[in-house]
Image 1 (cartoon, helix red, strand yellow):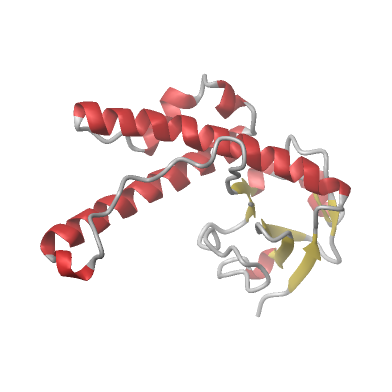
Image 2 (cartoon, helix red, strand yellow):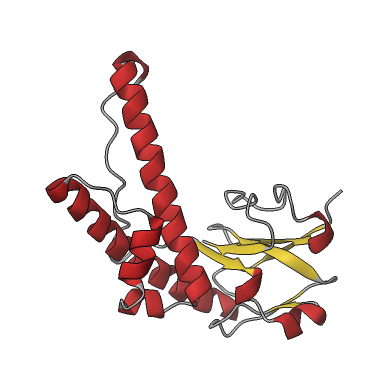
Length: 191
């Protein structure tokens, strides 16, 4: 059994602006890394995997604008998107009738309107805050008071906030629209 708690952070909540700004910075990193991967793939015919991109992006301002653990999670998302593209392309080459058209390269997020998911692992959350029942993401001037001590936190695009107690943080979080990172225990995701 998982204990789930939801907190809604809508556009009127003072914490919303902080999360929105961080999601915007996440989009900047995603797009910058995507540019590097696309250029290598289109012009050199080679794929830059997560390890290569993490090395390349560490000195980039978009990488430094977020905690390192969060930036790494964004690059992992990009890596998964590319792997999905390659799998779809392979399936398309085997049987094109299963598709409406040829799979396309992962796309950029909109330059001004785009936002991207934020994933906070346990290393990017305040340990002191967790002991007090507070979720305090690194480099974000927000905190969320919980009824219990939690380790899995997720924010979705619609402002729904859910947290799962550490004892049951191995499965999906039924309290949020975003369960994409439930397979990464003790993580927080923001969108």
